[in-house]
Image (cartoon, rainbow, N blue to C red):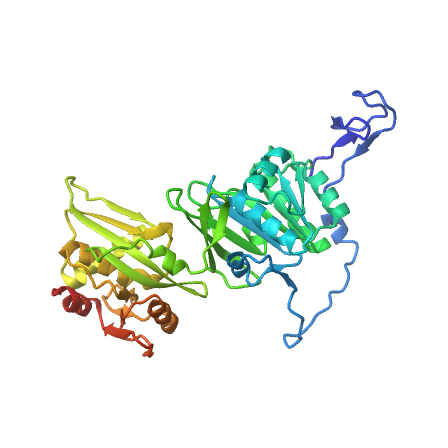
Amino acid sequence: MAKTSFSCSACGASFSKWSGRCEGCGEWNTITEDQGLSSGPSKKSLGVKRGRTIQLTDLSARETPPPRACCGVGELDRVLGGGLVAASAILVGGDPGIGKSTLLLQAAARFAQAGVKTVYVSGEEASAQVRMRAQRLGLADAPVQLAAETNLRDILTTLEAERPQLAVIDSIQTMWADHVDSAPGSVSQVRAAAHELTTFAKRHGISIIMVGHVTKEGQIAGPRVVEHMVDTVLYFEGERGHQFRILRAVKNRFGPADEIGVFEMTGSGLSEVINPSALFLSERGEPSPGSVVFAGIEGTRPVLVEMQALIAPSPHSQPRRAVVGWDSSRLAMILAVLEARCGIPFAGLDVYLNVAGGMKISEPAADLAVAAALLSAREDVALPADTVVFGEISLSGALRPAPQTENRLKEAQKLGFTAAIAPGGSKTVSVNGLNLRKSGDLAGFVGEFFGAG
C-alpha cells in the first residue's frame, strides 16, 4: 500500500498528514494530498466496478506498419530496425565513459535537424555542460530543447505541455519519483521511473530514449523488469583502448535483435563506420601463427573479424585461460574437444584468445575459427592470409554448418579473400573468385591443415 503524503502548494514543504496551516510558510488551506504520477483502479474497486469490454481482432487483420523517423545516421537507423518508431520506449546501456551521452546527443541533434521535435533532459550534467559538449561536437546550432532536471513529475508535466516527438532521458538512475520512498538510483525508484516514462510514451505518442548505467557484470543496473517494460534495449559496447564502438540491439519489438551498428570515436564525436569488416581488418599485417579471420553474422550484417590466439608454456601449476571478446566457457569446451577427439593436449600451456578491434562475438559459428587460431599458435603454423574460417563444433568433434553461408562468403569475397573453410554440411554456394573447402569433422580439419589428428 502506497504511503499518503501531503505538500504545501505555496512553499513545497512536505507533511505526513493534513493540517489547515502550513508550518513552513504560515499559509492557510494550501496543503493538499500528493497524487501518484499515474493512477489505476484499486483492488477493492476491481471487485465492484466492471471494466470496459476489450475489442478483439483475429490474426488475419491487416494493420498499417508503425511510422518511423530516420535521423540520417545509417548505423543507428539500422539498429533501431529502420528508424525510430513513434510512441516507443528505448533503453540504452553501456559502461561509464563509453560514449552513451555523446551518442544520444548526436542522435538527438540529427533527429531535430530532420524535423523531429526533440527534448534532451539531463539528470547528470548542468545545461551549460551539455552545451559545451554540443559545441565540441559541432552541434551548437541544432534545434534541440535542453533541460537539466531529476524530478520525474516536473519532467512529465513539461513533456505533456511541450508535446515533443522524441525525449532523451539521461539517465534513468538519476530520476526521482516523489511518490516512492527511496533514494534515486534504488531498485524501486528505477522501476517506478521506467514504468512512468514507458506509460507516458504510449499514452501521448512520444518516443522516449532512456540511458541506463550497467553493473560490473555488464547488465543494466536496476531490476530486470525494466528491460521487459521497454520496446527496445540497446547496449553500447567497446574497449576504451580501441576507437571502435558497437551499438547492439539485444531486444527490439520493431526490428531484428542482435543487429549491430559500428561507430568510431574521434575527436569530434562518434562517426559511423559504413564497412565494419574493412575497418576491423585494416591493421592486419602479414599472416602470422595464431591469426585467423572469422566470417561472422551480426544480426543481418556479415562481419569479418580477426581471431588472435597465443600459446605459451605456463610457469604455474594452473595454466591461465584469458579471453577478450569471446565466451571463456566456450573456449574451455573447444580445448576439451581438441584434446579428447583430436589428441592435442593443452596441459601446461597458457592460452590467450583475443577478438581484434574490441568486437564481442557470441555466435557458435566462431568455434572453428577459434580452434584454427589455437592450433595455428600451438603448431607455429600460419594459415594463408586470404582464407576465412567459420563453423560450429559439437562435443563429438563433428562440424555443424553455420546459417547464411552465402552472405558470409560474399562479404569475404568483397574484401579480397579467395578461400574459405567451412563444415562439410554447409550449403554449397558459388561465389566468383572464392574457393570453398569443407571439412567433415574436427579431426579431419586438423589433419588436413596442420598435419596432425
